[in-house]
Image 1 (cartoon, one colour):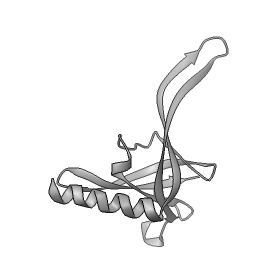
Image 2: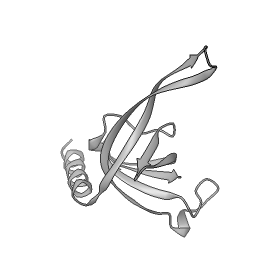
Image 3: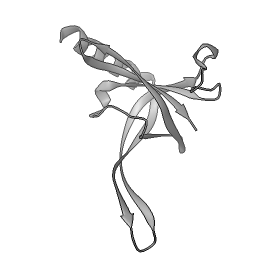
Length: 118
């Protein structure tokens, strides 16, 4: 685990030093409210540091459009692996996660690249 641990530390330190605050919201439980006929979602959230940038022309495909964003976060900051069911808050703007790419070394996630749509 030597190189994976080292890469996690480097990614975490770099993102912590130069990244901005982002919040990942995870829906933990959904229940149906029979009184008013709505679904109530219980959310948990975690704030981490991350880099956000626009999508390049070469990344545009059937799923990713030119107006989407990329977010890079350290895997060390999270106790869970993000999914497309999670939401991301950046500067009070809510983004849907379209796709998640992982950088993995020795079966250990180092960082996540999230493609977002506002």
